[in-house]
Length: 306
Image (cartoon, rainbow, N blue to C red; front, side):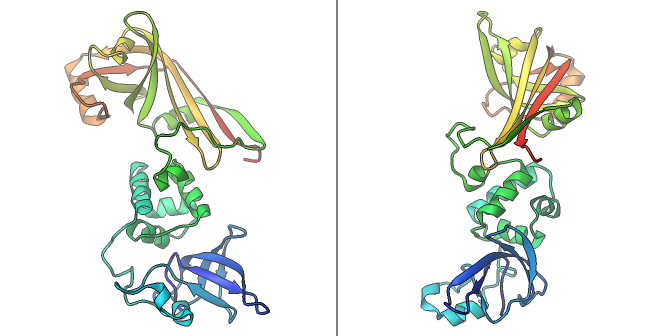
């Protein structure tokens, strides 16, 4: 018996021949793919070390040679044989999910080992997922999304145009306040926030901006005649949040404080060099605005048992 990372281990009932348990192989202990395996069971979501018995077989991912199909191969061959098209030696050709996982991991500044540890999966399987077309289980995607600070929907590439927060609420949610240190940490992990200002005509406005945190100040670039530029010289509110649709939980942080236009040439050069929050809106946006929070508050929604 030989397997690749991401293959499925199926345990059959000796009486009926029907599958009675299955799981995703998330860890190999031998380079040739022979047992034992680390298997994440679909019914419990737990990882155990498995030495397959005679009632077990491997359901492979698509590892067949070009021009062949799984349907053209006998079941016994599919269960036991390893294709010569080994993903460990082939050139990387990631699928869409793998590309999104890799982008989010690099955005968080995580190594594969760190991300795999947070998601409780094998680093080898994460490497496989990022480099090969794969179809991870929903449980694996949920853990990856949680580890990378994103959502299952985002990793799958869907729901981009849908507003967040439309999923079901937790059955027993817990809403707790965040202390200032937690708020600072969460602020530093994001790149888009919303600044609440009074526009030039006196009407209230909330504007999304690309921002960075430099020396405890929130800084962003904008055009001198924009609505966001009217924040300079006033007391403003700045908000960031994160909603995890898959887990029905999230957090928000609110910073309140004076905003000012940054005009000192040396400071502007330093911000341009260190912060570099390039505005997605494009165009000439050379005015730096700095917000110095005098109040930092936040809240997090989690299951009651966390």
